[in-house]
Length: 380
Image 1: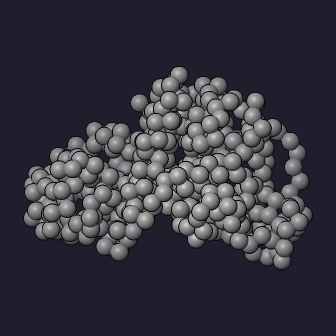
Image 2: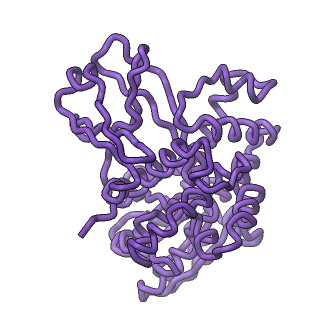
Image 3: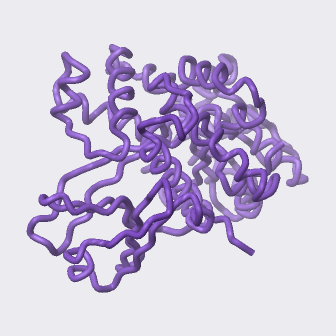
């Protein structure tokens, strides 16, 4: 059992006057985490899984506060509604519980924010606290073993990623990843009525897997996938982001005339999923894409750490038309943090045009020799 960083945050957020909304891809450990949370909260509780047909039907037909209380139980103080995005009008139903029974703490989970957050945004304004659970972080592996052990397993994590079942079943990583990719990765997206051809989603993800670290063109992706226009490509990419499969880095631009202003790069929340799509499980030193592998790993780990530490930073990459480039940018209240990511330790000169355009900045080169603080692991 790997202790998750988000556990204490959830426990301390209970009974503070907010519905807790826990979002994350399927198989990242939301159910396991919340079962651990319930062990620490000594209040009568009930678990309602909307993937179960009888629970879904009961919620769908419950239209009054009395019917909802009967479903929850009159003596319950805490209710977990798992996979709540399945339930029609879930936002209105949770608002009714919140307004009528303020003593009941609701925790709702969802594996697709495009369904759950959209349905809740208006009814639950000011009434919810949203948290995200990602695959296990490198920092969490250190805290549950040691820095030496985490370092020893680093190449394995780069290849097979950090889904909980993958981490907990050494020797079975490839088979488990294939099951996750084939059975869970697209489940919520393909349930949408207007996504009619899963082969297009699959081709699009494979194209993104081979372009990690490079700028993405909707026109080029449209040609690679075939038979879909750029508007559909953009829509599918948005759905993949909201299903927590990929995330986007936009181009950073403020001052320079020749800066790329509308570029974008896409990364995967988990290296293992990317490698499944590429059908490449070779060790990093044998790969031509080890730089992209390392870059995807570090940026995804940075996002996990920033979220768990409640660091609200806007993230970008930077490039000019004459090919000057910086891998990763964070904007923290106007202070610019610039990072170059390298497989091996080396000296890097950041572009003079960037340094002069953004005088209020810091620069760092992140490599395998010094990456721990970048992902939240201290040297002490």
